[in-house]
Length: 322
Image (cartoon, rainbow, N blue to C red; front, side):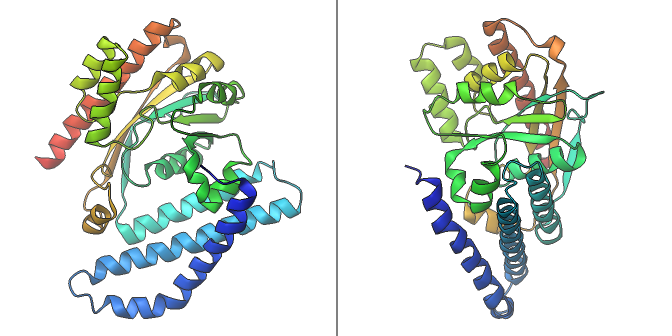
């Protein structure tokens, strides 16, 4: 169970500052020691630099949130500026230190005129949510509202900043559809609601469990279609349907991506840094007028878009491996 916010912030915020200070103090020693590792020294140096950037930038963001609290501006939109600078800093550091390159095609988050967006993305690999938030805030000047796991509140920056802005934290089996609906109902013309319909990071075992669950629930058509998709878990429609009902004027953007999906463990991250290929993403937009109105039709439509994403992922993986 997640501790109360007061407990989390009293425990983990000082811990963040201590760990950041520790990284700063031992950095020269770690930098020198990395040269003794041998052939992996460049990889170790890259991760050491990125850890330093992460700790210092998160600490600065938390301090900026504290300053806004002192000024009694805990609901101020300036928190978006804090998060944008924080995420952009991590993004830039990942480019310099980890070899991150992102290629986005489609441009679906920039529709003509100012209209709210519901963004539905696959969830696979470390940091894909940060990349999405960065592109929404920096490239498209959107104010993201994110549906995320409650456990992320153990991170002080997310805990403090995200709870001061319109977001939803969900727990497994928590039934967050109503909360997502309320979040979508308040979408403004420059807002974007970000949902990961799979409910978690992709893994083959999670995919098999999700298909078995659909079979147990006798949702035969969905189970059959899910089994035919090799690269995605079946979408969970509850939160998506609630968002569509609450924001009927919102366009819907789908995001498929590859490049981070083979980095599921710390060992995978160590082996694949620096990244040798770009993270490729495809965004496509469905105008609100083209979204079906009937519930069953919307579920079928959601699966159609997910099948489109699965086909794109398969084709681009084949092109990369070929």
